[in-house]
Image (cartoon, rainbow, N blue to C red; front, side):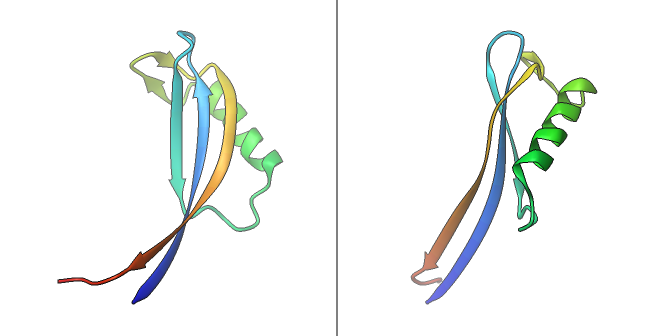
Amino acid sequence: MALATTQVLKMVFLTPLNKQVTISLNNPKDTLTAAEVQGVMDTMIARNIFMTTNGELASKVSARIIDTTTNELFTA
């Protein structure tokens, strides 16, 4: 029985059409701060780095790190 823990940083934005867009990054640094994430999100918005089907990223909604622990019971 093996345990595996993973982390994902999820950054949520709004487009000009008021649609949410989530950008996920696996295995963020353990030392990552809210200020660093906000700064990166601001840069992504200012430089129009991503274009979605609902338009560019217009504003920040939230950011969170999600921890997931997987307990593998068996493999065939």
